[in-house]
Image (cartoon, rainbow, N blue to C red; front, side, top):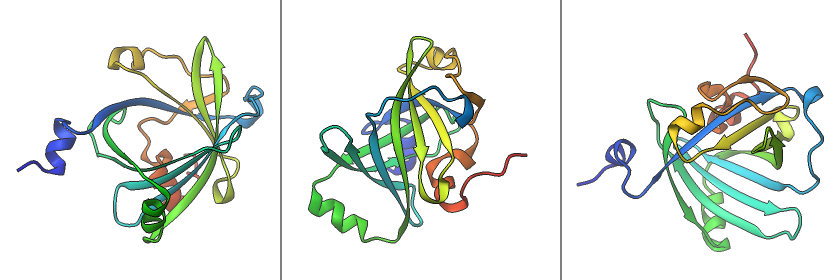
Length: 173
């Protein structure tokens, strides 16, 4: 019998998401394009699952998903599985206990690479994070920080969505 621990260790149905994240200084952030994606993430209480609505600012099209990122020894490479939902499925899951964060995602080209820049709203207003995904481990680790980066936070769980939704903006040491 295959379990979640098996899936996290050797993904069969999930894929490995390789990404790095940086804390961005708002005063050093280059001008971002007006086009963005509004992301509403609901972290379901007591789980590692995230319910996400993504709405494109240009045409208003939406994508609805339920995602689980498995815990991993390497914070840069996690097994992740996603199910795409229709409105009734999304509405059913949105009724479960959880907490929501909202952000606007913009593309930032820096050093010839395209980073995703998330500008948070509500209780997290003022927080800006950049991230980039990469297909292979060696390439990911060799990527430079984007424009405006203060420091890398890829291995800091306080800057993961689940940590942010519970504890708010981390206090810097």
